[in-house]
Image (cartoon, rainbow, N blue to C red; front, side, top):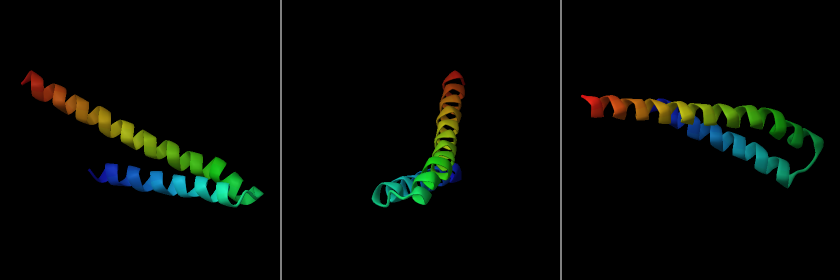
Length: 65
């Protein structure tokens, strides 16, 4: 479940960037939140989705056996 930990960590990093841009609405934090924060958040979501699909497949195989 190493990927799940990475997903959680990336989610927190993306969230921190978003909060920073809300607390200090100058161009740099807003641009970072909209670019880096979006990439980090999308990567975290992709990892989470991969884990969910992998576990669903594993359970399906287990039920068939």
